[in-house]
Image 1: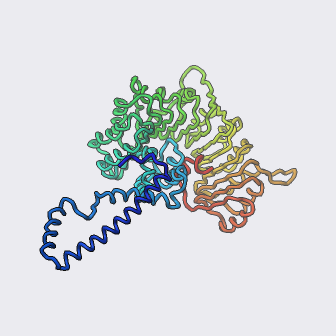
Image 2 (image 1 turned 180 degrees about the vertical axis):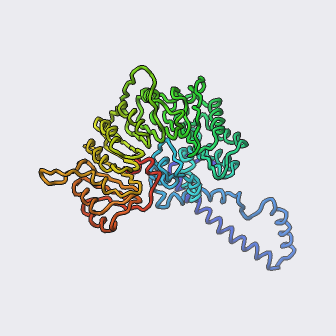
Image 3 (image 1 turned 120 degrees about the horizontal axis):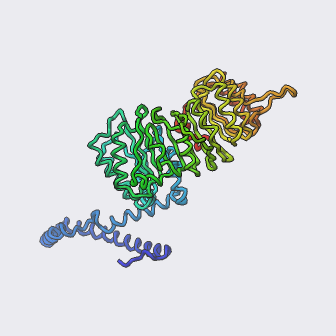
Length: 539
């Protein structure tokens, strides 16, 4: 048959209709002659001739069966007919761009996938097997998915399943994602004891196939420093310089490595030097390593005290990252520097997201006076072990010289925390988003801190006149206090109560808020992943 792939659609349709009519006529004629043949063989009018015909059919039937089988032209045409039919369904007439968004939303439900953030989060998992389900709905969907490599470019190794099966699945994903940047994450399950030394080669094979395009690598919840070391050694010996852009190493919650990873050789710098996103938990590289240079995103936490950085080392890292836009330090100390030279302040012109979680007051007192974020819309998350008056003296000068527009106060504990909060927000006239984690405590004192009383006019005034979004998380608030906050902050248009009890009844508050606040939701559940990446999901 001649190649007709270049025919205009109207001409191709005309030829197909003509062929369909001819085929219908031929099938009808085939049916009629088949019936006549059967009747003539069974009627017994000419038994000798009938026997001769049966012998002829018996010889030819095995090699040339008259009944079309699965290899016939009709059977070959059926998949094409199915695709045409599926493409005519109303849902399949949607634009391709919309289809891709629907598929991505259906298959990837975590913030990491939806927002394409570089740091996967262990509290949420994408079940990429949803892709396989979507691919089997109809041939039209399958073709779209198979022809879109980005759907298959992220592979999460699940050691709780058979690693041999995971290896085969990884090969299938890789074959479908050729030519696009690859992202690989390996999550260890301590309860399942999934990763053993005998699995090193299999894991290395999964990594090795992707090395030329591997831009993101995440080793999550690892229980063994030996496995980390073996994996990193394989990467350094076989990786392609300049490819890897994101590295995540998160040790298990109770696993801390008390010796920094050595980074002195040239191969290490060539492979890991171009990294722009780095996340470390329970493990560090040497603090003077080039790995920390020119980062855009830096997250470090759960670092043992014996290898905690000095303030000089931390400022050296920050000064080496002039384009840094996200910084998170948590569960660690910053030690005093013993250098004789004076420490220089660091101006962070691009820093947009700053998260300081559970750093001791002494560490905050070393860091905050020496960093100067310049962004006009700084997002800040702060948590202290306790919020007391002496913490205010550390925080206030920093807040007064930065333009914080989004603030997350984490773990509001301490006898004076309400007073400290009110004084903090008084330094933030441009604050428009506030998230309060009440830590299972009553929150009325914190809410009252948003309101100022003018004795000369006997009026209540807003401390944050631009405030339009407020979240209350894990605690309790009273209806009267929320009403007063809304009345003094007329720009509030979004309120969220997440695992937060409203006294006496949330229905009463909801009814009262309806004329004043357009977006109000009460959710008894707490989305931990949303709290982790709050500036994407909660604003």
